[in-house]
Length: 149
Image 1 (tube, rainbow, N blue to C red):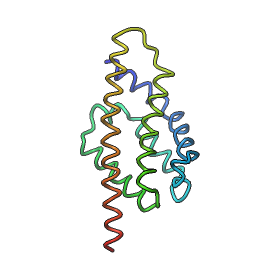
Image 2 (cartoon, helix red, strand yellow):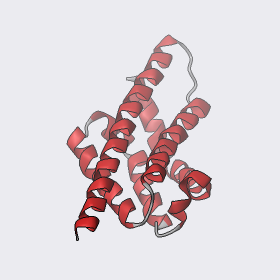
Image 3 (cartoon, one colour):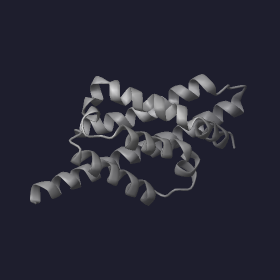
Image 4 (tube, rainbow, N blue to C red):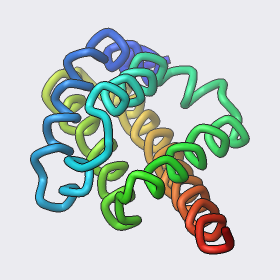
C-alpha cells in the first residue's frame, strides 16, 4: 500500500515536522494565543505523537480514539485561553504542514504512486476534519463547565 509507505515517511520525519510546525504555530498572527499559557514542550510532544504514529491514527484508531484525544485537546486549549478560531487554525496548519512535506518529499513516479498519495490525502482530510470537530466539542464543553461553575 503506497499510502502506508507515505505515512511511514511522515513518521520517520516526525521530529523535524513537529519542530517546524510548532515554530509556525508560535509565530503565526492567526495563532497568537498559543504564545500565552500553552507550553511549547507540551505542544511539541502532542504534535510529535500524532506525526510519529500517523499510520495508526489513519488506519487503526477508531473515531472514538480521535474523539478522546481531541476533546481533551479542545478542553485544554479552552482553559489556556486559546480562542476556538485559533485552535481550529492550529489544526488546519498541522494538516497543511503535512501536505507541504509530502509535496516536497514524496516522489511520484506514476499513476500507482499518485493514487497512493491521493488515498493518503483523503485519509488525512478525514482525520483532521474529525480532529477539528472533536476539539471544538471539547472546547465548548470546557467553556460550558466553567460558566456553570
